[in-house]
Length: 422
Image (cartoon, rainbow, N blue to C red; front, side, top):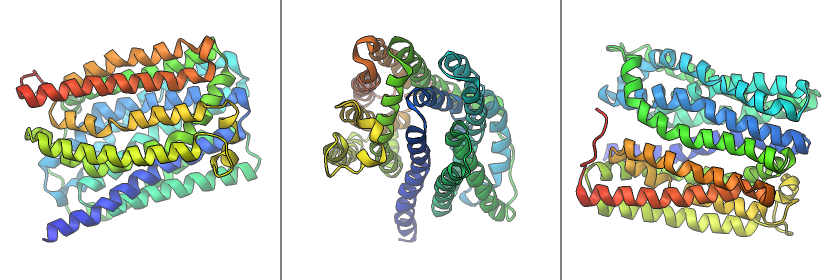
């Protein structure tokens, strides 16, 4: 009974954690699309995709496998591993941050050096810090201390908002603000998380060490799976600036920011429901997995359609028209972007079900086979302009939905017959 109560207490903490972590990025995105002019908004979109790409390496190759490895330790011992796992993830985080240099190469012909320099520096810093603070939060969840993880996200969100307001009020050049605020938010939340774990770690002695090579062997398929959509997103952003214009990508970025709440809700719900489908898939319990998946789709579907009705178009009761007016300069762009994000969010739990089924190789194959759909959408930019991005995202999400459904049918119908990494 006590255990169940503990779980019930931790479930809302998972939603709060995911929500505030996402809202910190959302607040920074709002600042970027409102403070930057049209062309530089497109440049920001290039750097944002580079930031996402840069965090993939440390997260999937080292930190996620390390988090999974902690289940072999007693719950009260897990936080004692944090210094060790952070050291293992530090170098990959620095290497991943080099994606900011790729963004600089792509964006250099589009804007002045006094914009490229600040964007490159702050994006690199944010790419180093973001996966590390995210890892500390997840380790707290693994140690059954979910509410402290939620407080870390609250610190991240509060710092991001405060930094944006303070930097803008101090007349800091706008190019320093978006990723500068995000870097400060990640630094504050990482420091706060370190202090929380330090208090707890002192009472426990760490047993053994994780090896980087062993973690990398486990993480290589997750890296392959995550690298494809992240790399495709970066290439797609570059294609849109070339085939249409930086301004077109800027309008698409503004629409992405408005549609972000759909993904925030999906992330929060999946944190709560995914453990159930992971366990069900590992036991070939199709009934439980499908019942949980239907619950997730029902909630995300109703909420997404409601948000589409409110924020999809410029009308009197839509608050987003005042918050992000640039998103509504092209009629229908926000509506299509919300639809694309709804399709993307709808497969979060399905993805985790395949993780529970130990179908990492299948997930990597699906990612690489569906990423070109996003590029096909971007390739239409000379005709579809800013719509190219949500067209590509929607097509990619629908293709993944179909492919993952086939993989799950194979899992439940044939058993775990697919060769998986050891």
